[in-house]
Each structure stands twice: as structure tokens, then as C-alpha cells.
Amino acid sequence: MRAIILSAGRGSRLLPLTDLMPKCLVPVGGRAILDHQLHALAEAGVDEAIVVAGYRHDQVGAHLATHRSPLRVELRFNPFWAVSSSIGSVWAARDVLDDAFCLLNGDTTLTGKILARALAHDGEYDRAGVGLVVEPIARTDTDDMLVRVENGRVVAVSKALAPATATHRSLGVVVAGAQSGYLPVLDRVIAGADGINAYHHNVVAALATQGAVHAIVEESGGWVEIDRPEDVERWNARPR
Image (cartoon, rainbow, N blue to C red):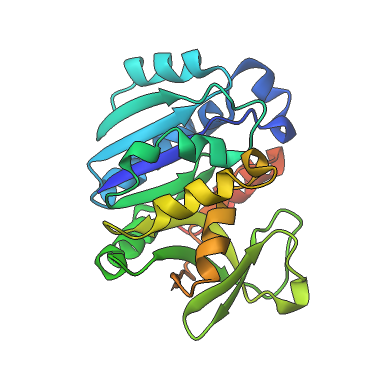
């Protein structure tokens, strides 16, 4: 299984830290966000990761060269990071998307157990769409990527989804088996009107209209999206 980590963004809400470094290298608990992710992926049984960098990508390369990784890592540069959304970073890895993969946002720390549970489903998605890791919600937060799940299937994904209709939030983790059908939908979404400004979740949303997205429900709470300084405090208080 290969992982793709989308780490091209600057992370302006973490300023001034990200004046000096890319968001994925911001230290949390004495370790860069990226290192937390690589160790969790290795714990889950992933043996290779592609890190797609953009803002200060040279620093990401230097970090990977000087910090031993528990799995093989390939660094790729997304030269369009400043003018496109996360879909541009997915595009930078499109050549591997016709095989099994795990896609995750570069600003989210997750336990290895969460990823292992998600990857345990990957064989279910050969020729049958993808899986999206989601968490049930009692109330929504401003930054949530909202999700509606019906009968185990994701039927809608959007930050603009009406909160009253949302049942879950996305953890930003997509799991796909070989020949999942993800790649042609990515091509269609990015080729659409304003496609370069789409989130990678727009691909999931398009697949959801075909009934091709399975909900992988996660309730452990062992994840934190690092968007703001207060999220570091949330990380320290998370379940271990």
C-alpha cells in the first residue's frame, strides 16, 4: 500500500510559524507533523509514501534527508501550490492512482490504529469506489469538511453542506483499492470550471453521486487537524 500526503500548502492560519517553515514541518509534541504521519503510516503497515510539497519544498526535502523515516519516502514538487487548491497536489501523484492508495491531508495527525482500521477495508474497494474515513458529529465546527452518510454510503461531501443535513465530518483520509475508479473522476473534476481550485474532497463528492464512496466510521477521537495554534493544545489533550 502506498500513501500520498498532501503537504504543499503554506498554512496561513498558523502564522507566524509558517513564515519560517511549511505547515507540515511545524513541531507538535516535539516532532514535525510530517514525522507523526510517517510513523503512523508505518505502524499501520504502509511501506511507501509520496509527500507532495509546494511552499518551501526545499525545507521538506532537507528534513527528509536528515530525519530517518520508518518507510520509503518520495518527495514530489507541486509547482502550482500557490494558484491551486489541494486537487493540484493530487494531480502531482496521478500516475500512481490506478493502484491501491491511501490519501491524507498533510496537516492532520492520526494514530496508527486509525489508519490500520481504514486500510483493513482497502480490498473492498477494488472496482467499487473508495472509502472515506469519517467521524460522527454532534455539532459542526467552522473548518469541518461536512459529510452526509446514509446506509453506510457517503452521499454528500462539502464544506458548504447545510449543517442540519450533515451526519459526519471527514478526517481527510481516502482509501482506494486497485481500479477503484478514482483517477478518471479526478481528471473530470480538475478539467471542470475552476477545477484547479477544487479540494480533493470534490473528487470524493463526485464519486458519491455514483454511490461509490463507503463510509469508514471512526469514533476514537485519536486525530487532530493542525490549523491554528490552539490545535496544538488539542493535540496534547487527545486520546492516546
